Length: 332
Ligand code: MLT
Figure 1 (cartoon, rainbow, N blue to C red):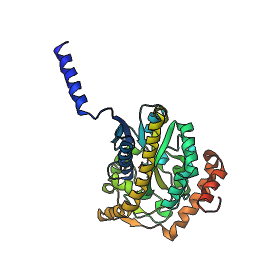
Figure 2 (spheres, rainbow, N blue to C red):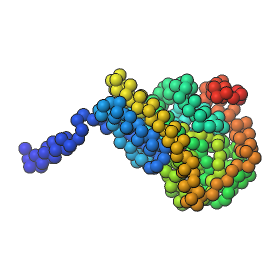
Figure 3 (tube, rainbow, N blue to C red):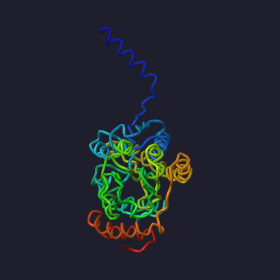
């Protein structure tokens, strides 16, 4: 054995002694930075996974899109080159249009609506559909709150005020059409490019929940906030279906139980943190405007123009009607 080989073998043996016996560490991609809902969901999942598996399974979070842009992580998980990813649901919709029902404007009107839909029968149907369409399994649901509009130029409280603003949206047809219904052409852009685009003023604004604005430090490059409620952001934790299928039944049950625990922790995290984070953003100099007239104009334009355009993609009008009636509302 050469000196180099002996040295390497010795180093590997020393490292092996320092590691916990047989713990499998999974890579978990996270689109956002530290301090937001995605990180909280990921931490809760890892803690529960370690507990459920008696320390045999654990995970490592890679924040800020280190393992790829959110939409790219869906492809990576589907092909089995990535284990888990935490991302906004709007970045899954292009791969599985059925989940688009959850990003149609003004369908989810409260955190309770979001929890009812995702944790009930409708969420279960979406899990099955996403496995079929996209090769990934949703095992946990994160809740981030309503996507508020931010911009660097002026206070916005009416649809008219939007004129002249260049707004970044995810590459998501429903969101693009929503802004069109409000009279402007938004700029579709990957999540990972958004901070730089705001900083360099390639775009004037974007929308995301307070928790995300904070985690991404958007307050450094954005001044005005409009308290819109058009989409309640849901942040699923997905696992590669190929990887999941390769686990034993016992391990699969442990992963699912950890996902369920993370879901509950995420809902509580939002309830505890959102109001504080909003205050913190005000303290850092952000100015918040309420939409005029109880948001009526935003809502009427978006629901009348956008919902019918996506009936086919989401599997028919009856799919939306089922969602609305399960929330105790009138069908569309
Ligand atoms: C997006 O705007 O692309 C996403 O909502 C970002 C996120 O996951 O927070």
